[in-house]
Every structure is written in structure tokens, then in C-alpha cells.
Amino acid sequence: MPKILNFKIILFFIIALFALNSCKNIENLPGGDARKTSPDPRERVKKNLEEGRGFRLDNFGKNLKGGDFLFASANELWRASLDTLDFMPLSSVNYSGGIIITDWYSDGNSLDESVKISIRFLTNEIRSDALDIKVFYKKCNQVASCKVSQKTGSLSAELKKQILSKAVVYKKQNDDKNFKPYKGSSVNTTR
Image (cartoon, rainbow, N blue to C red):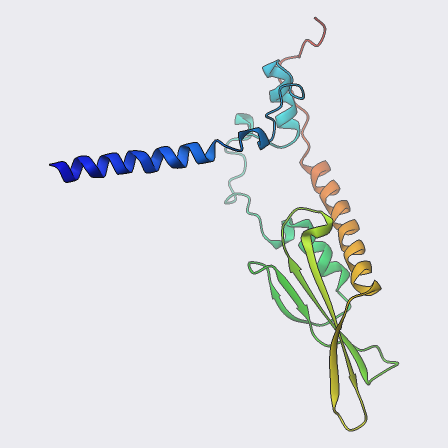
């Protein structure tokens, strides 16, 4: 009997530890600042539904095609990266692993020089530190001995800038497409 009691006590302390640990960063939760959030629940509902958060019962049962799924085409950074690199042959593309690697690419002018680009996704958020872009150069001489080197410079920064700007455009288009004005009861804003 004491073993069961000891087990229950230990289990209680473990659960309490997790509960207390999860509460320590509660001030960092989104929407937690009362100064930025309206006290009127109708206004909060309207704002949340217009921003695409929550669900509506009037749309229930209308989409009987199997549901909406998020694939790589829904990730703005992923789409922008593929669109930016569409002129290069791709060697490895792994959405779940978050990496795109191109094959060696050379324009028709210099056959002894080629470039390879690797893009690793660190987050799905559109921000400057979301991508780790590496550019490799390969220079071969006439005897077919090649030297490969990684270079940091303007090409990597320019690729990141172009990908992020395209991703912002895709995000705006997606937000505009998903925006649905709230058609609930009229909200009285005058008091």
C-alpha cells in the first residue's frame, strides 16, 4: 500500500512541476496585454474572425472535399525560394527536412566555373534569420581537377532579400484571399 501512495505523491509533484513551469512565461503569450485588447467580446470576436483565427459554424459542412491541408505550397518562404531558384536544376528538395539544394549550375559563358546553392529553413516565419543560405563555387581547370569553396557575399544576401520580398507578397495575397469580414450583429462602438 505505501508504494502506491508514494507513486501518487511523486506523480502529483511531477504534474505540479510541469504546470508551474508552463506558467512562468505567461506574459509572453499573444493577446495577453489588456491595454492592446478590447474589453468588448464582440469586438474581439470580430477581429479574430477577420484575421482568420477561430471557426464559423455557417461554413460547417460546406467543404466536403476532404478538408484543407497545409502542404509546401502553403508555406510562403518555401514557395518564394523555389520561385527564386527556378532557373537552376534541383538536386535535393525536402520540405519536411526544411532544405533545398541545387545541382551545380553554370551559365553558358564559363564552363569551368559553376555555382551550387543550399537553403536551409530555420523557421516558417518570414523574417531575416529564417533562412540559412550557403553558396558554393566550383572552379575547374582544363585537367578536370576542381576546387570547391564556400563564399559568403553579395549573392547570398541578394538571394535572401529576393526570397523574403517574394514571401511577403505571397503572404499578403494569402491573407487577402482568406479575409472574410465579420457579418455578426452590429458592434456598438459609441458609448
